[in-house]
Image (cartoon, helix red, strand yellow):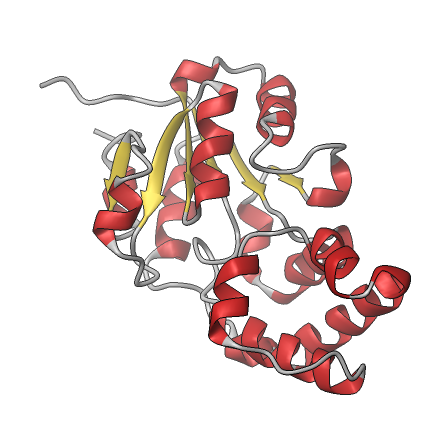
Amino acid sequence: MTKQIFKGLFLDLDGTIINSSTMIYEVVKELFQINNLGTVTKTMMKEYAGLPPRELFEVISPGQVDILLKQTVALEEKHRSLAPLYPGVTSLLTEISNSGFPLAVITSQAGLEMDLVKTSYEFSSLIDFWISSDDVHNPKPDPESILIALDFFKIPAERTLFVGDSVYDIEAGKNAGVLTGAALWGGHNRREMAALKPDFLFSKPSDIKKHFIP
């Protein structure tokens, strides 16, 4: 079977590049405590996983969105050590970048959060294009962010791979007409991710490389 050679790689951030689940839990728990918003449960965390922070804050405390966002960024900086990169991610990004393929990060994070990531991790210098939920009118699963990246690089959707770890990522990719890959290395259930019908299931970051570098 002929290997699919792509022209560009787009990736989600949390749960795909960064193992941020522990950090996010600590941040949300502390945020709720500071603002007397109640108790954080694992069910709640799962329910809101992948939502842009502004959408989440509009649900839990509509009048405090900007304040909660600033507090969130401060807490993420405080707990950044709890969010390492997944093993193999830096190697993948380095090889893809060195081979001349466009790299984009498409995240549901707010712009302030994304800016903190860009100054906190060395891998950020390898990324050619970043899009946060603040950069679009309609964040994932709407295809807007992916379509913007495609236009920026001037590459065809059918030769572009978008890899993420959530239903929002896979749906956004499908809506944009790109090929989709489910990132399983964050401990996601393979059967649940397969049910989303991505084009590829990747067990580890290095599995992606063969589709770019034969």
